[in-house]
Image: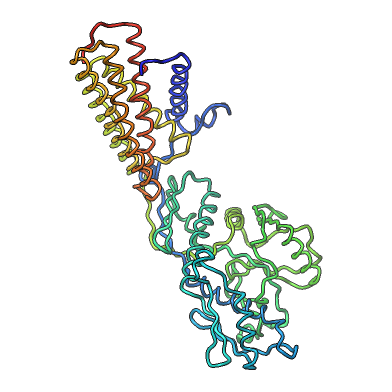
Length: 536
């Protein structure tokens, strides 16, 4: 246990030096660190919402609206599936009288002889839920009243769809917040249909609420020029069309085709720009979207089309010539800020469902500063108390343990910085706990050395036996601690996860510094001094 070859000594020194270098940026302001050379470490410890201040929002996903949309999609899927279905005589199967219920779509088959064929065709629209061996499917096909076929969304299918919608919403929210340039937002699921959003450093939640409050469903629709203003006023709109208001003037309305010629899902990029001195949003489609957009504009030269965002018309320009190349601009009464906001929404993509803000809270930086100050005071008091105890109890060996303890704290900060971990108030509690327990290994070792000295062993033999015999107990204890901390980090969220992150890193670094580094200090001193007796 006292054998330290030169390569091992250099390896330990390099690890300690790396930890100190990685922790160094935390001693300087963020602006100053940004000016350092590119090869220098620049990652700093991120402060959580409770330390830095910021905005907290609790959002609820409108999953009921998603189910209603699913029923509309199901109705279209049924029509597409039965469009080319033939009966026994080779003719088309007759059907109609579609009815949409709470979680089901039904249709009436005109001939009882065609019911079985319709059922078999519609069963192809069902998919397994929870794996192919679960036996559950997302839709169920049944026959009621002899010739009425009903396709129902099953509870398992609804639950799976809601779960997917919330997961997609979390990812879209994350992408939108990342566009703001904020650091380390916390975005987690709460319950079945709620999302908690915490953005450190953002004191005004207005912009955040604006970004998250819009679905950003972008659609390009042809204008129905056959509908007059009088028809729109009286609500006389033919099937397949709808009336939408203008974004900047809700009193002004226009009739558009219900079916979109292209949607924002085909966008690959969007950004603010200027056209003839006016703020606009430039966009670019992917290859498939560009071809579709070019084809539609070629076929409808001279006709107007509407650019619709969340059910409101931004503008309705006339197609003067085919728009090829897959790019264009969206013009309207934009300011530079509103054009940039719309570009952010389009780049991040539309939300799969509407989000309702249930709770809004702003944490001021003063509270965070008080928390940091209190945490620093607790850390300093805890460190001083541990240092004094180890010095008084174990003398020179206690001094080496204290040096290892300081290096342990530095390494924790360095590792958290390089991995971009976020320090929260519970994390500070984990740091204080780590400081208090970091010397446990040294206490076990030193007490074992005392026992060996009392048994009459020489100094070197006693130190060697102390480290060898105590190390097994230290490893066993810390492995169980790491397992518990890792489980808290994996399954926990919010404060529990913040505490577990610091505790996990602290346990690992404590074993390294408390056992290996402290043992190195002791060995180097023993080699140099070669004492006949030591005081413990």
